Structures are given as structure tokens and as C-alpha cells.
Length: 363
Image 1: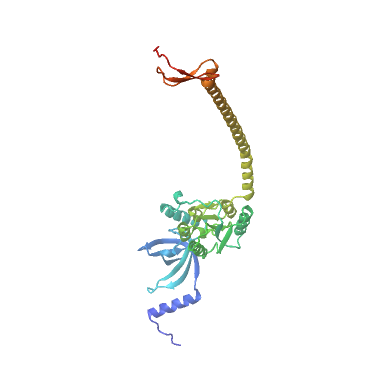
Image 2: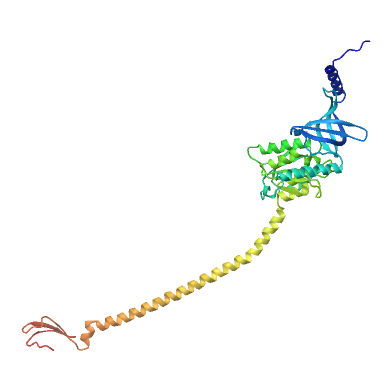
């Protein structure tokens, strides 16, 4: 049987079709070598182990986690034969593999975002003292979610909770959480807080919370954010960029709302401490009012006495000046012109006399 003769381009196309059919997607683990970024758009590197090496290509915006030479990574890729006949992997995503690589990638991205000011304390916003509407980004199947809901309701019931069900680990987790955050931020009436939670896990399980795009989405949120991921010792970049970091999902609920019973106890204690002061103030006011009344009565009584004394004095003077009283003492009143020949009227205590003036002399 005669084999078909293919052109180079046809041969490469056949090989790529075969590869795509046999391996539509592969995950390859190895060490990064010859890492470089071209024109701030394209990323090239080799992934190798002790027996082999293969070239990798991806775009800058696909690289969600920083990598560098010597770092062990896992790439999700499609194998491909380039038109130059070079076998390579077209990478869809890359993530660090192993504790050392994860830590190194974490430190690289942390330094980058810190330099941009994303972790500055001045960016942090205060949470409302008692939110009535809370948005939750989590997996409802996770134990951390159940703990959060229980503690929130136990501490302060009646909070309206809106949940965006997402994956919280794995390759698709960051994009799902980003979409959920964006969804809540686009609502006409915004929730008061966005809470992102998941329970504990290994470093690989929590890798999604160190995704650069997710961290930037949290930083962009118009709504104050709380992130409670893993256990108290786990620290992700999502924790660092959030307005408030909760040690665990349970702690996130404790941060969001006060304990109703504790609030009642506190209010009762305050009332108990204030009541004696209120009673004392009332007693002081009562005594002050009584004293003012007593002083006012004394002032009025004194004023009355003074007025009575003045009236008595005036009455005495009036009596003394009464013409009747003067006549009773033997005096007489003369009415008329004091001219010789004039007739005048003389009034005594007992009679009124008429007399003619015979003589007038000066004193």
C-alpha cells in the first residue's frame, strides 16, 4: 500500500489533529527553566525533569500565579507541534506544585501586590456595627459554611443572607468566586458586607485564595469584605487584601454580629450602674427645688412684712394729718381772705363761726 505524500504543513496539521484527539488536555509536572516574558504579552518557559524537557507557551493574562526558574509547577496544556516542527505545550494554566513552590509563588505575588499598595492599612474599611444583609461567597457543602451560618444565627438572628454557591478549591474556583463578587457589586441595592469563607485544608486546597485575579477582585469590591479561610494559622493573599481578616469561618460570624445575650447582659449592667446615679440626681433636684421654694417663701413673707410696716407708717401719718384730728386737739381752721373788713369762716372741733376781720398785722 502506497503511503500518502504530505506537505510539511499538512503533516503538522495531521499530527496536531492526532494529538488533540488523543490528548485534548494534559497536566504535566516539572521544574521551570528559561522563563521569560516577551513584549509584556507572551510567556515562554521550559518544563523539565531529570530525563526530559518540553517548551511551554502562554499569554501573560493567563498566568494567574507568579513562577520563576527552578520552581516546581503543574501546567494544564494542549500538546502541539508548531509550524517550525518544534513540539511544545500551549498552556492554559499553571500552578505551583509542592510546599516549597507554593510558598515561593506566594512570596513573589505578595511582594508584587504589596508594592502596588493593595495591603495598605489605609485601604481598610470599617464594617457596619450590625449588618442586616450579608452576601456569602462559599460552597454550601463545606463544613466551614455550616459553622458560619449556625454561629451567625445563634449570636444574632434575623440577618438576611444571600449565598453565591461556588467551588472553593480547584482550577475553576478563582473565576467562580470572582464572578460572585462582581455579581454582588453590580446589584442595585448593595449588600452591607461580602463574606468569603471556606474551611481548612492543605496548601494545595487553599491555593485558589492566592490567585492574583481573585485578590484584585476583592480589592476592587465596593462592598466591605471579610475573608475567613482555613484555620487560624493559614494566611492567604485574599486574607491580606480583605478589609477584615477572620481566622476561621466561625470567627467571621463572630466578627460580623455581636452576641445578643452578651448585649442584653451589657445593657442590664449599664442600666444597673446608671440607675443609682439617676436616683441621686432626682433626689438632688428635689432637694434643690424644695430649697428654692423655701427661700422664695421667706423672701415673699419678708416683702409682705416690709409692705405692711410701710402701710402702718403711712396710716399713722395720714391719721396725724387728718384735719378732724387736728381740730380735736383744739386747733381751728380759717377760710377766706385775710383782709380788713372781710368775712371769714372759722371751723372748730364743735362749730363753724363767721367773723369779720378787724385788723391784720404782719408777724
